[in-house]
Length: 210
Image (cartoon, rainbow, N blue to C red):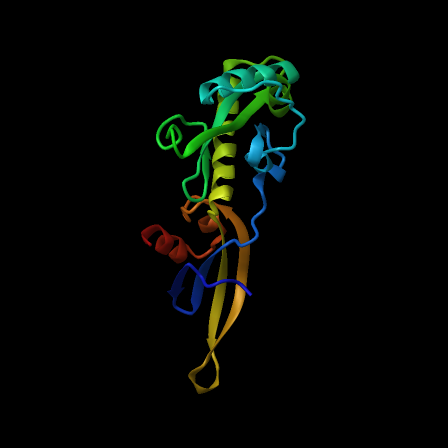
């Protein structure tokens, strides 16, 4: 049975309940364009890889410099590569940003890299030559895929159950599920896809003002 709804909206004889997705799919199992290569205790958060690190690192900056060099030696034709940082005082979140809190000297660190090769770009956009236009698209893909994984790591994945309520004997009500879907990443219910699944505009408006 589902956990208690984190949000419930009732309009006339229908109820919309929104739940946390207790068993979300790791988005790195999807057919992603980027590759996320993480190391150490956070390796499991990214993609499987066989990159071997052959050096010791004096500090975070040294790690970023040397690991990027080693990745470039083991993966050819990299078009874009960015370090991925983690902030984990309690729970975790990741980003390619170097702004606070991802530059915090106590509670943040660099766990690896996200990259896209030129061959990946050529296949994805069906081009023979990678231009600035394709590189800009790939930059946006990296941003989206890192943000999606971040939502998964933070537990920001949701589902909904839309129910119809009918009256029974003795004033009791019976609920019938009309639609039930899970796997919406992000806690903005207007943009994470939930609103798009609702045929009833009144629920979309209710979510917007909630």
